[in-house]
Amino acid sequence: MITVAVDAMGGDNAPVEIIKGVVDAVNKRKDIKVTLVGKIEDIERELKEYTYNEDRIAIVPATEVIATEEPPVAAIRSKKDSSIVVGLNLVKKQEADAFVSCGSTGAILVGGQLIAGKIKGVKRPPLAPILPTVKGGSLLIDCGANVDARSEHLVQFAKMGSIYMENAMKIKNPRVAIVNIGAEEEKGNALVKETFPLLKECKDINFIGSIEAREIPYGAADVIVCEAFVGNVILKLYEGTGAALIKEIKKGILSSIRGKIGGILVKPALKGIIKKFDTSEYGGAPLLGLNGLVVKAHGSSKAKEVTNAILQCVTFKEQDINGKIKESLTN
Image 1 (cartoon, helix red, strand yellow):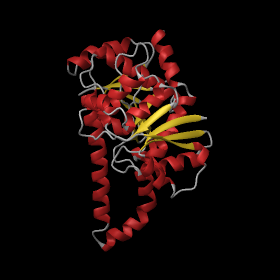
Image 2 (tube, rainbow, N blue to C red):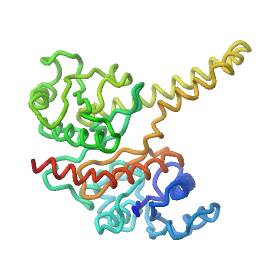
Image 3 (cartoon, rainbow, N blue to C red):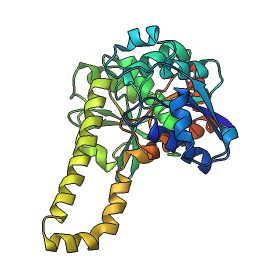
Image 4 (tube, one colour):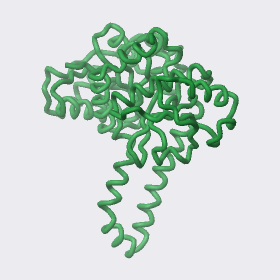
């Protein structure tokens, strides 16, 4: 039985969508227990709306909530009874195998390192979401945790990302690429030029060279390595472009009788394409390299993404991703 602590108060749709997602997860799998962390009255009120095995959903009280706009370090230190701090402490005490939150990214990143702690040998834990592509999912590492990363950090990101994709996503010998402005080895900024030869020499990964941003949606690599500033720009542009395209397609279909008739004909195919590029299918972004698992889901997450983030934790634990990361650092 795997226990996942879930921040019931974090995100734009808390606690309604969070609790719906939790109930869906425990009803889908019999090997999951969830500990909801947050304000007891709010959680109990929402749980009354559902039917579930009460032995597999527990509540741990937390009276405070860290808002997105609060300075992360100060918030983690001052709000000891916040849902994020209490949830992370459950991981630290090994009372939960993982912690999932849709709350403040900064607080989760800071708290993950200060409370759960880093695996010995990990220099910088990266945030690593899965991006949908035409070939499946690709791991973007890092997308928000380490803006001023060095070359040695990027090499470690590549190693951890490879371990994650090979074991969690079942991709044998995953292709690793570094984000660049061209395919040539001599291109790039100082960080990329310094990192490229180190990745090339690394025997633990299948390094295929540089990847340009336009190649990412086509699945040109399984692990996409970059520092967090570049990664976050890629992630936000990816999400924004996808949402804009869907909006314009719907607008075009509804703009005329011919469009509406055509829309009916192409609807099954469109639904399949939209599902393929739906980021919620992959759950949240794990903060790799910590003692225990911490997963950051989108602040706007609905129940489906919360459910998938919880199921993602089960795979992470079953495949012993942390154990494999520790092993790779000692070799």
